[in-house]
Length: 212
Image 1 (cartoon, rainbow, N blue to C red):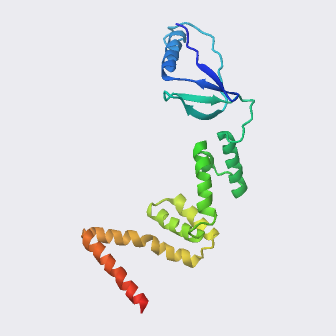
Image 2: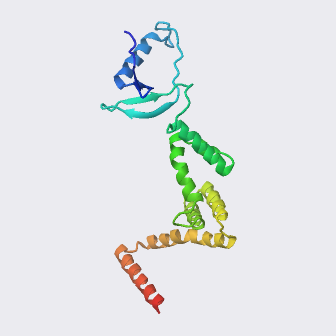
Image 3: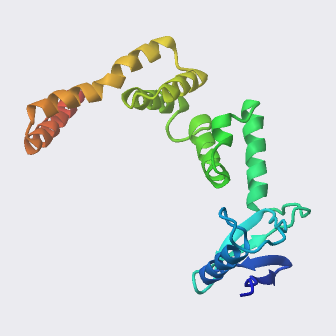
């Protein structure tokens, strides 16, 4: 049985390797018949190195099969390529911090490309919530999920955004406020409808007091 040949087509000058499941099954069958096994059975064959360069964004045809855009190793990435976006992302991170942290570089490329702009915006830039309060809120969450990485990062970022030691000390108490009262109310198995009604009454009382 001859090994099947994958379909290769051109799209805008870029070769596309078309691989579908039936092809893969036939390919594995051929290898199992030709490659020597651990028990010595099988026919010897010449091993040919087959290397594929970077993959451009995958496409699906009308049958739901994947077509991979194959980029030769000698071809430089063009604007819009995932590899180009990844290199730009690494460069932006290094320009921001002076290094590329290992915990960021360890992520899959597409994850870092997607998440870095969001992390940068909501950790370093101006948004609807001032940076100091974003980070103090993050510190409260970090304390409750018991994450030492998050606690260290959000404390440092809060200080970067101008949080004082006095504000951090207050946050240490506020971090426990919701969970403490939640535990006490849950322990009572307090009726939800009663709680919702009383919460509304408390709000109305505060508004009346504020108007005086």
